[in-house]
View 1 (spheres, rainbow, N blue to C red):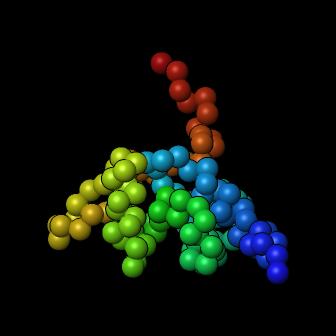
View 2: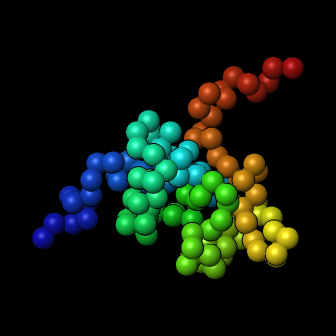
Length: 118
């Protein structure tokens, strides 16, 4: 019986690699990851994270509405607080990711060169 990496589909490996690149305190949505990889879609990314995400910082790959992973909210929130990820409270007092502030764009794809032009 081989290790996990041998049976991991290539796409799953790429998704997990993308998840590992997200800096502490930032998040990407399932759709962001799919777009960044240039293949698959939010559902495929979500499936990979559900199956294999435990090996990577899974709490940094989230639904577009900023909701923590169902069933793992408390663990996710502990990570967010530890990493100072921007959060906001809903009217009902639930913690959600502050998506406009927390979202990471993949390391400046398409934004390079915007800086410093005054």
